[in-house]
Length: 310
Image (cartoon, rainbow, N blue to C red):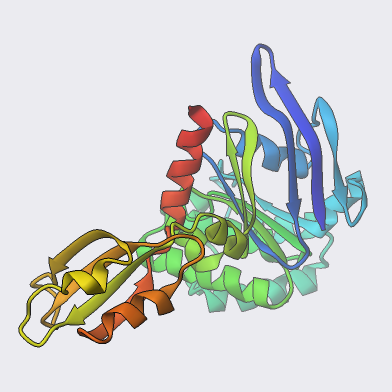
């Protein structure tokens, strides 16, 4: 749906983006990742036509992005921009009208969202009377109110307490299930693993990784497996059971585990799998649990950034 091709943006002697190409598929929930200063916010501002790239182009549905396409996009910037002296209800109506909604339709949708997010009593409050998290809820509502095809959030969970962050996550997931394409930047890898279908990682102004979450994780497999097991006498597995593999560790299960037994970690080759491990172990032990040790998104983030820097 959105394709950025060879985007470059410079500020004086600083290059914020250097030949960056990213593809946000239609209907995806796309996580834009990167260390501080990597160029994420600059990229989001270019998508929203707040600034223009020095080189490259952005395509929406296969054609160059145009000024009137802004009506198809909802944008929640990291730097919130509400009028502090204005009442929540009046400001929300004002912003909704800017998005092309009639006053009657805007009120109808605002009532729905205010009730859904527990904001009914805020209508006559001024923004300066709200906490940071409460103000962010208001801006979230005004961002999604016109039901855009694409929603772009810059650090959407910043400033929320855990309960409010979970509420906003659930709303974003529901919007995605209903067909909205979502793009958001974040430093919190748990949100990426919980929510995203696709990711792009920018480091030092360049794209260093992109793809579906499944493909990215698959490409970072280590072929390492962990097996919890029990032997009749509680001893470690005999040598003949572990000889076919490189044993990384074989330790007693931690005291916090309700089971008794041991935990074996083995390193396989790319041509081997869990069945090879089980066939060697089952004649000698009861297998309690077996799984591949898949790298977390946090592990992949750190490894990719470190490799790019070396």
